[in-house]
Length: 313
Image (cartoon, rainbow, N blue to C red; front, side):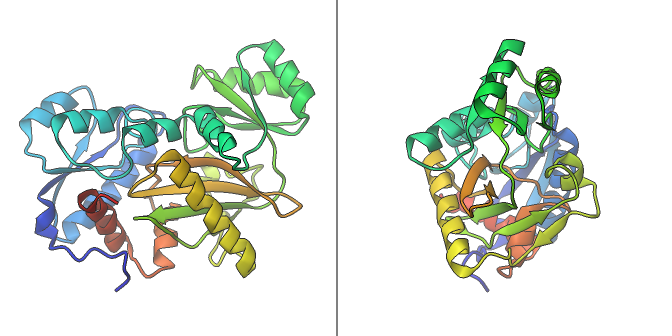
């Protein structure tokens, strides 16, 4: 048994509502994550039931007896602090980070500003609100660049661009997902993702894909995405990556569990991209892979996440 594993009687969690689905652009992923989490909790003996969060959620919240909530809502409405605030008002404990950390991590721009204020490395960026902003960003940042909606996850609305015309087109496309759009300097090199669970940094995963970047298809649909555990770094660089990831989470105020995405450039330097406070829990997802590397199967992982909502870590 690892120190991360829950030792509580499953009945001690009470009646647990697994919140999934929702209305965000990540709904389909959340439905898969929620089904997997609900099945694992029920198989472990937890009195768990699912709620596909929709227009009737407030009525469900009032009608159902809920002792605890397991949040598996990805994106806005579940990962941005709004659900966390609602549950706190209702007096219902929940998994994962609190209101402030959730809202901050969902906002890629504010997250980067916090990291920059603490001297943590994150790629240079600009905010796009017009074609003039696109041209100015091209001039100041150079190419290639990556365009991102500021408040979306799962790589939704993202695009790599190599010239100003493509940048303007990508900005316009990203605007259909979000009123605020970022463009970042492209970091050429390997990508790593690092999960944290109850204050512990799990083994980093090295990612490889034939796609231009680790996009939605590579994350959830493709069979040719490569996952490296061990990640391939030497001991010193892996220690540096783990430490940076822990600092990134601490800066945002993460609790319970999360996943940090990091790039490494040709010189070996690491660059923080973002932190996810409700990472995916599908058959393609990364946190379950990292948990397996420390001896936690999927059921043990969901129990550990749930346990953290009681322990406050």
